[in-house]
Length: 216
Image (cartoon, rainbow, N blue to C red; front, side, top):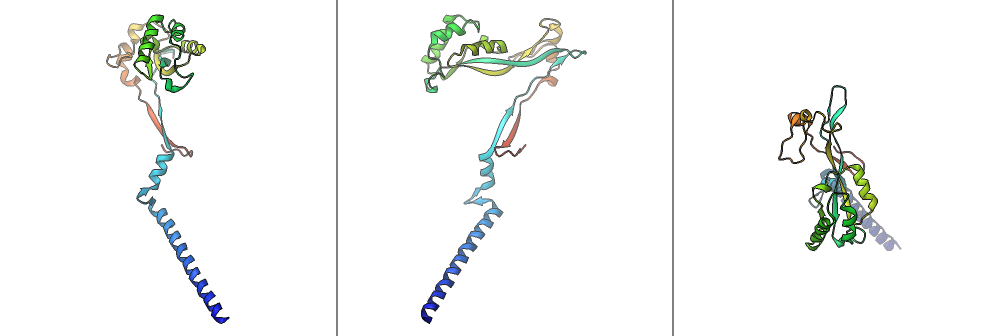
């Protein structure tokens, strides 16, 4: 009986020391990770930031020009570009299936001949293009034109938001106010050109965590 009890006590002591050893190793490992922030050479902080961090571009707007009474003479307003998706990989309803019908309904709105738009769409599809733009007359469209196109509910026709320069008084004092050129290679004229360094804008950005913590 005494021998069995001694053997049992020895086993209990051995198990206790094994448990303590495992516990010490685990606690040590956890402490090491907390201090170094690394696992197998991988930076845990960097991995977490890469996984949960997101960034977005904050679109900028060119400055407005007003008269001394505060009336706006030039400002940026929303505009829209038309894009035609041709790839069948997008699935039914997400690409142009009926080119002729699409051209017949869309061409008058973007000031193109039906035959010309049909050719553009057909050539793009034959070339295996994913999507195409539809020429200068399909760019910088007004909000009203955008709504007209959306009401058609044409599969594969998408509208991309942009901005365009708007002059409420049209040609009034246009020689003084000038004009902002859409083409960056061509300088603006009038006040638009002379004040360009004050009116020009640069897009910003914001970085944030998906967990809700703002980083910058």
